[in-house]
Amino acid sequence: MTKEWIRQRKKDPYYRKAKSEGYRSRATYKIKQMDERVRLLKKGYRVLDLGVSPGGWSQYARERVGETGLVVAVDIIPMPSLEGVTFIRGDIEHPSVREKILECSTEYDIVMSDISPSLSGNRTLDRGRSLGLAWSVMDLSLSVLKKRGNVVVKLFQGDEVGELKKEFSKYFWRVENHKPLSSLKKSIEIYLIFRGFYGCQED
Image (cartoon, rainbow, N blue to C red; front, side, top):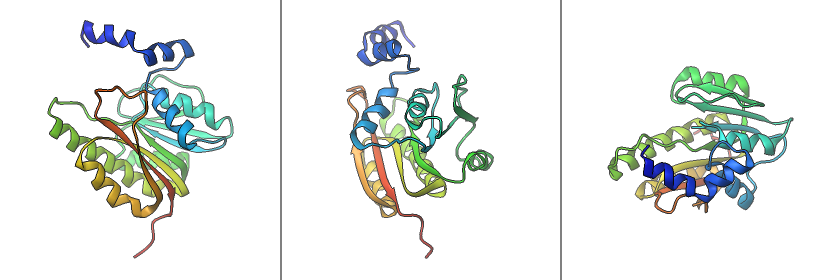
């Protein structure tokens, strides 16, 4: 991180807002704004949060689901402990990690993913990596979601968005594109919200 990056970050209104309201990151407001728009989280929900570190999304989710809910957070990067949140360190594509996720709950009301690839500076390459991660998130979601459950997944804008929507929309009642106000203007990230999981039908 350069001194200029740090200076710009400190000027960012959502960075300051997160500091003043006790959230771990400005990214908290991305899920908060999407939740306020389409009501993704409710009391008692079981939440699977992927790419969680440092924990802003899980922190907000815990507030929304309450004591009767469950928040399971997964990341390859360590996350400082968060009260009421179960953290699993590992890669979501690894079978042992998927087993641990299902040990916490056999089904979830919502899967949320803010996973981003390590950026190379090559937009074509970064979009491809983002698509691969989003594909893994959706594949996992189909195996852990309860019927009528929802998914929020991040990927980078481009033709890849249409590819993912086309492949997975058949499993859901509705699919929407979202770009939260708290996303940086220069960012190419976009979120897809898949709502109303039908379940996977046998051929």
